[in-house]
Image 1 (cartoon, one colour):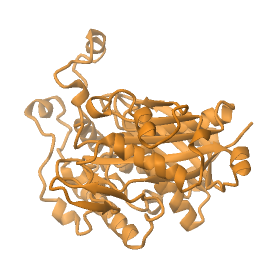
Image 2 (spheres, rainbow, N blue to C red; image 1 turned 90 degrees about the vertical axis):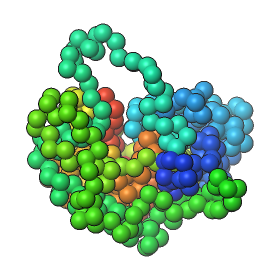
Image 3 (cartoon, helix red, strand yellow; image 1 turned 135 degrees about the vertical axis):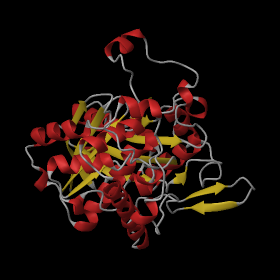
Amino acid sequence: MPEAVIVDVARLASGKGKPGGALSETKPVELLAHVLKNIVERNDLDPALVDDVIGGCVGQAGEQALNISRTALLSAGFPESVPATTVDRQCGSSQQAAHFAAQGVIAGAYDVVIAAGVESMSRVPMGFSVAGQKPHGPSIAARYPDGLVGQGISAELVAAKWKLDREALDTFAAESHKRAAQATADGFFDREILPIDVVDADGNTATHRVDETIRASTTAEGLGGLKSSFYSEAYAQRFPEINWHITPGNSSPLTDGASAALIMSDTMASKLGLTPRARFHTFALAGDDPVFMLTAPIPATHKLLDRAGLTIDDIDAYEVNEAFAPVPMAWAHEFGADPAKLNPRGGAIALGHALGSSGTRLLATLVNHLEDTGGRYGLQTMCEGAGMANATIIERV
């Protein structure tokens, strides 16, 4: 059975997901095309050898509609013979793309495949695809008569259940910025970031190569002055246990970004003279309560470790997506995880959460961290809309 290996994985530096953000004047298809073009060029790979491109994207509407992965590879100059598909597993879309890619290699269906992701939250705002629509039908209403809730309310419920107070949440968020700023200063992101030339609203050209969402001066005390983002009287009556601790400071910011991983069989890598950086070890998926929504990384990780025959202490680094601070904090509490190993270079609170791109963004950071520290196993997991999670273990080679 072939092994699925990661030959390379790279990303764009984050851009603020609003007008005026560093990447906001660039169409999302061009962001994705840039990472696709560069991932093959920097490995001297003939793109005609790529069996498939699997891209993740959540907001598949407007400028991100019509199978953006296919349009992007054509924009990148790939041969017309290379196919592509775009998948949506909410925030885990490109992590799912990596799962599909690696599983296809292991099954013998692919020799070479690219898993990727993109999201331009400045140009295709979150929720744009369902604006004015009611996607849930009467069956969901019957099953959940009190109604489902948005992720912000779910984050409040997680914070309340795990008794995470405001100070702890803000301290965690400030540490995310501190770690990301230090990693930037130390050049730890240099190998994973692909510089891109962008044009701003005034027509000026600049090269974007540093994450725009990091705020090095962030402190817990400063974050403590921010007001709750999601308070409403109706929800306060429905959920009296909520303490209203979630703010813009302990949540991931709206972000633009793109990322990609070059995945192939170990035999093809050897044939092409390419050196694998890591291999896929174990995969898992899980669903959980869609009202709490953000807790599925916990059962997904239990399933993952059981399948792998490993314990949390065997893992050298964990990337648990910081959609909101309570998510990785609750996860760490459940597993007794070492806080020094949790998002050691900062997480999405600092580095941004460009929805469809985040899965392969986390993978890029994890691979580079294992290489820089000599670690063997890395674990990646992330919460996803409607109460799901992907979980992956990779092994440095």
